[in-house]
Structure formats: structure tokens, C-alpha cells
Amino acid sequence: MKLLFAVHQFFPTHYTGTERLALNVGKQMQRMGHSVTVLTYEESEQEGLDLEGDFLIKRYSYQGVPVIAVRHRTPPLELGFSVSDPEMERIIGRIIAQHRFNMVHIFHPMRIGMVAKVATQKGIPFVLTLTDFWLLCPKGIAVTNKGDVCFSPGRGEKCARECYGDALRERLNRRFAATVELFEAAGCVVSATSSLRQVFERSGLVSGIQLIPYGEDYAGVKPNVRRYSRESEITLGFLSTLQPHKGPHVLLQAYNMAGKGNIALKIFGSHFQQTDYYKTLQSLAGSHRKIEFCGEYRYEDMPRIYNEIDVLVVPSTWWENSPLVLPRALAHNVPAIVSNLGGMTEMVKDNENGFTFEVSEPESLAQVLKRIGDDPGILNQLKERIRRPPRIEEHAFEYEKIYRLLSLEN
Image 1: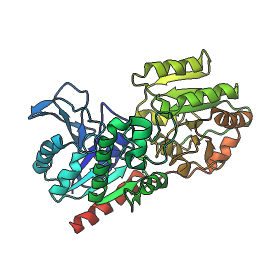
Image 2: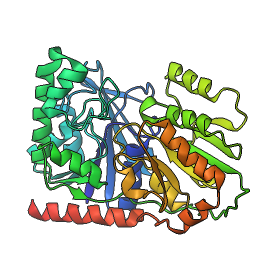
Image 3: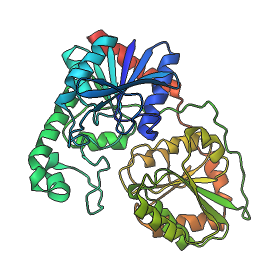
Image 4: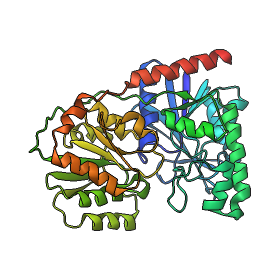
């Protein structure tokens, strides 16, 4: 099959979870004999772009996967807000016609959502994978401006009331209408977790979402075989972007409250120009000699990192779906501590293969850290009960079955 994978941003400029998912599945599909091309939106790159009408286009290859990156000459104000941009219809239509794709897989519709309409017009089925809440929440994280977790957008009414104001009510209504249209046209909608599926289905905008847990690429995985006693020194690891909704401030506050001298903390990740927030994190860390800011990390660094740390901590304050660092940790036989919210608790069971704590409550997390500091030997039991995630091959096979079924129906 000739597959077009559509994603809002991509390597090498962007390299977070959704981009990694699209890349890993794409490479596996190539190994299975399919042709894969990625369509993405290039926000910032200045080199190597060619002018085609009102758009700039860059064609390149990343780790053997062909990529077509597009950008408006003058980006519209609603670029990251709208589900579908009519201006992109012609350029995407030309790309699809040139390559004669027979299947489209949308990993994130932001900026490039028009690919769904174009595919439908040309009789090409498409699969939509939900990786966050962007189709329900323009901010993507389902957290209100007050910092409260949002359980339902009310088809845009709550968005207008609590986040955007009445001035944007009409734009929000158009956005939700476009979301409904996207869901109705999709040949199949997929979620990696039951939690995300339930939130979307409760919205009343979509039903029949298929569950396909993320698969791990086990190439290079080196299980952490370290064992612990009551005298062991423990290193906690945080691996994510240093942004408020990822909760590194919650972790630092809890670490300070726990006050366990046998626990160290390594924080990996970039703050992406959120300088003020990063200064807040540095202030929380103070001059503590056992807290280390390790900077950006690469996917290829994970085998080393997961053998340097003993526990992964994911203190997110939003509806985290399935952060890829979490199944990656379990694949490396590293237990995790996670907020008790979203899809994370589907992978981490309290007192079984890790611990959970009350979301956004550093006191709750501090109690978990104290427990580990008092008896590091409890990590041995957690590691024995870790069930390793499915492989990327299994993940891709499930998608291949969907592709073939949709192809037969069309």
C-alpha cells in the first residue's frame, strides 16, 4: 500500500510523543513492505523550502522515511486553532494526486486537517489516531485557564465560558462542527487508552473508537536489572518537556517535602523558551546537590537513561493519554510513579508495578517518595510485577488489518 501519514509537526525540528509514534509506525510499515510518506507542517525551518503558489514546501527524508513539509507564505491567525484550513485544499490535493496514495493515516490533524476532506473527496479512506484532546480542546490539554481539569467542553460552550470568552463563541461553534465532520468521514478512529476513548465518546461527538495500545520498538532496549536493599541509593527520573502541565514543579515540591537523603533526582528535558517557568523550577531546586537538570535528551539516549535511574516519575497535571516515556520505562523494567489521572493508570497500577498519587498534590507524591526512601527494597517487588508493553510489530499489524479492511470497503 501507498500510505500517507499526516501529523501536525515532525522530526527533526519536533520530536515529542506524537511525532515519535508516527515515525515508529511508519518505519515498521516500511519493514512490512508498505510505502510510507509523512505529510507535516513546517513552522520554523528556513532552509530548503521551495515556493509553490501560496505555500512553501520542503521535501526530505528522515531515517529513511520520505517527508513533505508545507507552510503558508503568510500563516493564518487560526493556524493552530482551526480543524480544517480551506487554503490548504489545493496544495494537499496536488500532493495526494502526484503520489497516488491509497490510504491516509492522520496522527494529529492540527494545521493539516484538510487532508481528511481531500482524501474523502478523492475516495481515499483515512484512519484517525487520537493522541491528545485537541479535537475537543483547542489547547490540547483539557485544562481550563484556572488550571482545573476539564471533563467536558460542552461542544464549545464551556470553552467560551471559561477559556476563550464570548467573542470567540462563533469560531468555537465552527470548530466543533468541523470536528464532527472529521469524525463522520473517518473510516476508523483509534485511541491507545480506554481513558481517552471514554472522554471522546462521552462528548457525544464520536462513538465506536477502536483501542490499540502503543507498541514499543525493542531494538536497543536494555532491561534495568538493578536490585535494592534498605541501604540503597535511589535516583528518580523525569523525562519530558519542562512545561507546567507536565508537572515538574509538583515533583520538585514533593522532593523537597520528602526530605530523603538517599534519593536523588535527574530532570531531563527542554523548557522550550518558557524561561520564567524554568527559573521557577531552578528556584525550587535551589542548590540541592542531589537535584540535576540534565537538559535535552534523545530517544536514542533512553537505554542509557533508564539504566541510570531507578524510578520514572510522571507528575502531569493534565489528562495525559499515554506518554511514550511511560511504556518505554516499563519496557526497560523501570517502575513508575504517576498522577492518578488519564491513561497512565491503565499502565501503572498502584502497589503493583508502580505507584500513583493525587494529581497536582505534592503532599501525596511526597508520601510515595518517603515510602521508597524508607525501604528501597520495595522496588524489587514492583519490578517483578512489570508487564512489558506490546511490540511495535503488534501495533503495526493492528493498523495494517484496519487499512486492508477499509481498502476492501472502498
